[in-house]
Amino acid sequence: MPAPICDDYRMAIPSGVLADIDAVLDRVEQDLTAAYPGDGAETQPVHTVYISAADATTETPARWSAAAVALLDQHAELLAELGDGDALRLARQRLVTDPIADLRLDFEDGYGQRGDDAEDTDAARAGRTLNALGLGACGVRVKSLTTAQWRRAMRTLELVLDGAGGVPHGFVFTVPKLRAAGQVSAAVRLCEALEAAHGLAAGSLRFELQIESPQAVIGPDGAATLARAIHLSDRRCTGLHYGTYDYSAACGIAPQHQALDHPVADHAKAVMLAAAAQTGVRVVDGSTHVVPEGTESQVAQAIQRHYRLVTRSLQRGYYQGWDMHPGHLVTRWLATFTFFRAALVVAAPRLQAYLARRGGRIVDEPATAEALAVVVLRGLDCGAFTADEVVDAAPDATLSVLRALQRREPS
Image (tube, rainbow, N blue to C red; front, side, top):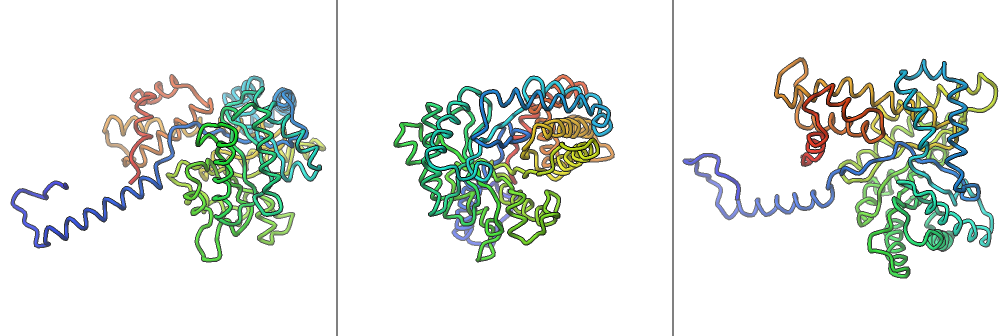
């Protein structure tokens, strides 16, 4: 029961009415807690690398690493102008040791129509490849869940799992071209059927939804289709991925203007961010088809462009994006490390002031302290700085304290 306002206070409203209001608000809070459990502490990869399943092998990370390091070394002077020196050093180290944080083998647009026998062979090999690589996050993009393609999508997914000998660690599959929330119900049913047929643990199969259609953002009733889709996913949906070119084309944008920073992209991703907030579902930015190849001038322009786009996404709260070329890894890691190292400079004194309960030029509220803690934890998770560097800048901001701030109850 709620505490009395004061000892001698007497309400004119009948106690039965108050009890009814209590019951209504209790149900509302239970529903909100179930629908919006919070974002959790699971590490989000900074990117997803997409590569055709026909081309991927266990050597893919090493090949991408070598190509990325070569590009970094060749254009170190330009890259040093974009990011700070420490971030550039960390980026090169990451490219050498662990360049790909999340790998998605593509059986959809990047794979094409190769015939059932070829796709069967590639699907089984993809499962073996993902299992052998042992990445922290991985998966496949299957064909869309439409009446024409869903059986092919199911067969591919089944063969991938057979090839892997189960569900690889961190595995998800991407459902492309979402247009209606009912497709998510079909994806859930597909997961349940595969788990039952192959003796997999219940709930072990999870998926991402790719937002490539305006109908996924605004449905015929004016509601956000993707918001309903999240809550129909039985907690199996882990992310919303923006599809740059399909979405732009569907909105009628001319090809030369299709880009991550076009207004239609900003609108779609803003709706995605609002729909996914506090659900535990991640919002992932899309790709750019501009790659660092060609003349020296073209390579330099592509490097600058991708660095700018990654930084822009980070500033807008999209902490993960697609990379389609080894050269994208260079600017992805450099922009990410530079962003979070700069964020620590701002966040550390504010966190320390909040934890010490001091005043100052900026007096932060609990929600802001949570956001400060989360951005520092993201920087720690991706390797932009160490826990010792955080404590040096904010002595009271230990890892346990940051985690406690992160777990603040949604309001």
